[in-house]
Amino acid sequence: GQQVQQSPSSLVLQEGENAELQCNFSSTATQLQWFYQSPGGSLVSLLSNPSGTKHTGRLTSTTVTKERRSSLHISSSQTTDSGTYLCAIDGNTRKLIFGLGTTLQVQP
Amino acid sequence: EAAVTQSPRNKVAVTGGKVTLSCNQTNNHNNMYWYRQDTGHGLRLIHYSYGAGSTEKGDIPDGYKASRPSQENFSLILELATPSQTSVYFCASGDLTGSGNTLYFGEGSRLIVV
Image (tube, rainbow over all chains, first blue to last red):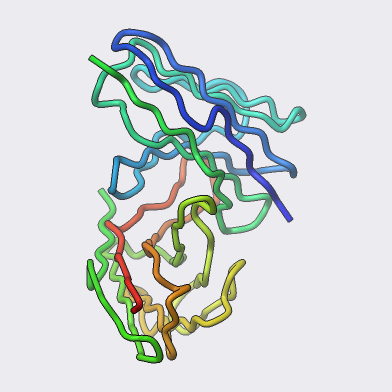
């Protein structure tokens, strides 16, 4: 079945540093989405980026469809960015398959 | 902003008992989903629905039933709860067709089966 692999599994940064999160997937995807999950909380959509580069605020996502990979760049990290970042694809279905996530801790 | 509300937020159930997790969405989305989240497994899809009256099996449907009596409501039913079903359950709604569409998640329901 479809698989979504994220790396690194965890990341610790000092406030102000940049973060680079990776997502690799095993099948074609018409939808690729990045979600944020606060500690013990729900999921919130950050970006939908099935191909190319998309920016929102301090977030930049680049997806290379033919190489089945996507990245999420967080610039000038803040302590409030701490949490888990999840990548999800649909694989031409109307449901999302999630990776295990990258847990980010930003220290002051 | 899409609103998805789950109840109960926390539940302790006994083995063999029946548990119903409810989900309500107010944004007229056709598609609704139930996921469970466990350490080491991430989010896994249990059941989903394309509209009122429809339910589809996800990747881990065994031990679960689903019911979609209306556009707004989608329930997950554990007829005979087992300790292995201890988890955090998330309901979501949304439309994945077209650019920019996404899923909106509820706050989660934490279930402990003893």
